[in-house]
Length: 336
Image 1 (tube, rainbow, N blue to C red):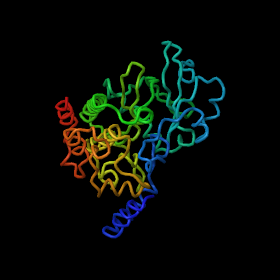
Image 2: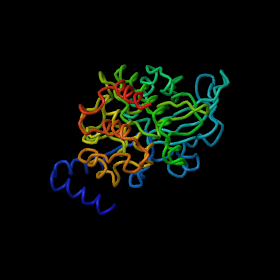
Image 3: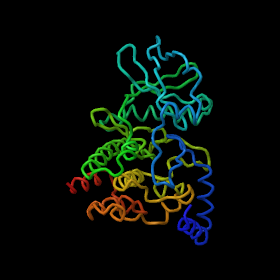
């Protein structure tokens, strides 16, 4: 960690020891359900999707994947290959033998099936996606429970993630950034209207199809405002680099938290960097206490108007951000 980041961490410890202690504990308890551990915060980049070979190296793919495997009624889905692995599941490419189309199968990892909380969160993702029929939200086709295992059957998108695009191209052009942000905001607006808060907006959770269309995915830790899924005491869910201040502090979140996380994602599209870098506890502290530098400081081509939109999304206090995704969409439209 740099001397500057160490100084920031020391400042938090000296000025607010309770906050420092809280962040240290929550950082240790943080669970990244939707992706491998984010080891790249210090580099300012999101963790790209894993290849099947990398998946095998980081976490063993279930043994049954090594031979021809079918799941579903009358062996409807044939598993072809592993695509990626996250903290709670493995995603496979499969063939729907009835409809003759490729699909994505997400399986809850075997060692988590007996975890009641994890199983409920997995089913919660299925229920959330089933309610969210929107062109910028990845659709679910089916939920399978077979021999004590859980599977989500989803649309298969093959053109990578937004994280991949940032990793290969660096900064994206203004038009593309606004198009992506507006599309994801429209998906969030719909989800929020149905009572869902995503809680893990980041480039790795935005998938692209070969025609250039894109979808928001991984509602595994989404929370419904009316019911929600309870989590273990002291457990914070999400990705440190993209957490809103209230999420990092373990406080209640609402739609404005997703707007903050989308702001971090826009910041990364504009600069190829995250605004807050360092170890996990330091990044979480910065989300709470340190204003984000304007994107134009890193990328001089960013206009003052675009700076203002992103910085408003990243306001520390929820009441100072755009209050709804619809408000954000209007601001993005005004940039064109």
